[in-house]
Image: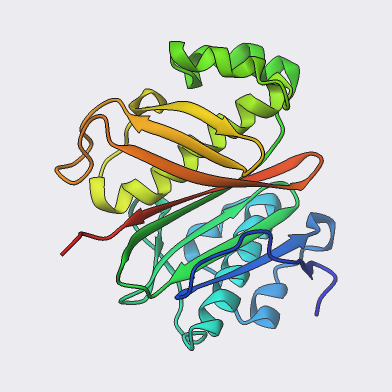
Length: 236
């Protein structure tokens, strides 16, 4: 294993039919030669990208390769689709995320799951909180910043991450971008680490207004957290 990648314990408990891979990566150890070393194709779209972008893409795709290997699909490439979304092998649902130092991929071939959204975020600064709170939060969510067990910066990061992971899970079905105010977080269960949220608008015939969802979150370290949203498949 190269010093660029350090495998990590898996923070999420997933149902059967799912696999995951988590790592920490060190941008200072990144070299373009790591792509063939790790068996990941270098996409032409990165030819003009800075080293930071090349490093985080490599870490994410390496996680995807390892997670797919657990499904027996390690030789299947994960191409880049429209708007930069990963194109997974037929029958596979998946999601990739990365922060400044963490990367992960979650995959499933379970037909009962329509899509997966995972997101990793570093806890925001006080300045970012003040500048972005009204852009990300709807009015009803501001009260959550006073959560007894979490400071406001952590709560804001958690809500932002939840909306990102939900977008990742919903986009394959919805097929277009939608804003942060499409969902409202109504409760954070800090003991079970579950976030309850509701749709404020109809995003799709199968995602009608007022639909309730739950997502899971975990702290990866004192400065980093991750959220997970799963969309179930159609009921028969």
